[in-house]
Length: 288
Image (tube, rainbow, N blue to C red):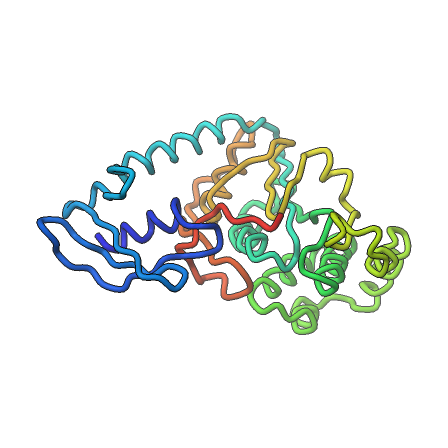
């Protein structure tokens, strides 16, 4: 019961990127009192012993009904995805955004499963919230995907887990000379370093621009990292491999047999770290 309550709280009630943890559970007047720790404070919540109703100051929450309503909303979201013979999937991120990394971890198993059936690409939000390192990591990933696409999956799989670009370039067998030539040419074409050094160009005066994909950002109304676009429609899904797979498969006119393969339904953990690592922190956090 305590695990169910914590999962519900972390997926629905806490601030994005934070999570409550269990301190203790005890019986109190025929119900369970669950003491949680959240942002340095111990907060008690109450739940019926059958684990059905969460008792809060504002009243009872039927957790199963709440989750079912959310599932139905996601089904309606899926039903609204346009169909194509070969879906076009764009994930907009910032390379060091914890929630962008969370979404990439969810997407990578789907890229491996459906990469030959759909066009799945990574794009970048038109400003960088995580400093100079993000500007140049965005640029590095852009060029690998553009000119050495067969190496991009392996590079990204390594990067989301280690954050070590040097190691990942080597593991993915990226041609670093070719990469540097692309990065230099792209930098010059788009004025990336020039804008990084000129704070008058910064977004809201705070963040350096990274506007290689600015036209696409404007086309889809991208507001932050991550933003998932399937067949030109912005889609909100749980950040698990299975949820991403289901959303992409909903974009086929005739889904391939691979869409019947089941992937993990567990939400990935935000930030750099093992792709197998999971979290209760939910799927709503963004860098915006």
